[in-house]
Image (cartoon, rainbow, N blue to C red; front, side):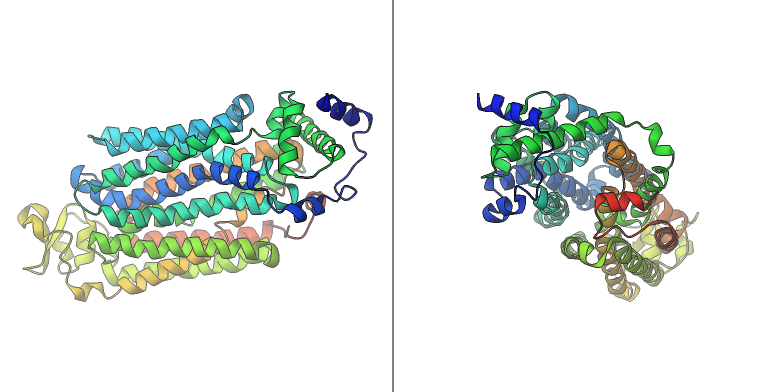
Length: 527
């Protein structure tokens, strides 16, 4: 009966109440973020943690996988890229699945796939099985990357939505950091099985918590279950009067109607085309900065830079991941205060400096000579020799030689200290690049993307921009190691720095400032 009364009130005056009349801020300031809402957001964001963990753990596991599964730079890239490949396709289907089955069921499916992927990877007995496991994880990542931010935003109080959505961002970068810390405990033969295996724990806990969290009110309204939606809204806004709950139902219904009125065709005409170019362009430059190489291949990069002991390579990668986490926290504080455009223009210069210095650091370590036909041409340049899969280095003889001609215990861990003069410089340069990335281009595109589209095309536009991100991610992940052999590590990072210069020009000429503006004012920028 109570629900019927709510429905009648909504029909009689659908626009009678607004957030200021009902003192929405008072509801939220008096109660803070309800424990019910925080628990729901945290539970859902475990998928974000798994996204970060799987991104980071492959970096450490790859150093040990090489001992059991001999791989070339191309096959290594395929193992890393398989996750991105799976994510591209599942992210395309995620929106339709979450609208059909619900946000909660879609999140449950993602958690289940994370468990399945972890089990397949930890028990893998062949290269093919590794690819299958990574593909399953990628499907889970694609589902999670699309549904989790939406789910959290739809169960969050309006004026605290931004704070709660950032939980997913922090869980993701936190997962990357935790993955490196976990990896340090399993640096032994077949330790990669444990690195993958322990990742079943977070999604298993998530599955235990899922029955206790609600479905999204938006999904319930879409399915005609307004009574259930109001019960959940009453928990999201403790103390809100029935009139306010009816008003919220009206707003959700209006949003659903406007969303249904949009089409993909509208995106490619004025006034939506420029926002689409901006969103896709920012996502493209985010990926071709090469940042994900620091996550996917962080430990490998450290090894290439001269930290040839596996433990040292992983430990120093923790510093890189911790920098990313810390600067992401700082970015969440600065992005509204400094402004999106200003922070992008400033930090993109930092990425150019970091990548340029990173290339210089690799000149110290490996020189500029690309892959050669004969190992002897490397001479005493140990770092360059070790990058070539066909070559090794003899500590006893001090020269590069064919792998088959020297003892195995003298390979990949025998560079003399004289050739490592650039390793600390290289590590410092990588930290500078990651810090600049996390402060700007790593975070701002997602914020800008959520603001610049009108409601009727927002979901479709975000889908296209996110697909751009994943496709560029796949290209970078698969091509990084082959590029280091083709044009050297230095050339590869200098190429990324050129991309960032182009990114700076793109922001300068194309991206307006959106901070401090209402959604209506932002729309006027493109008219």
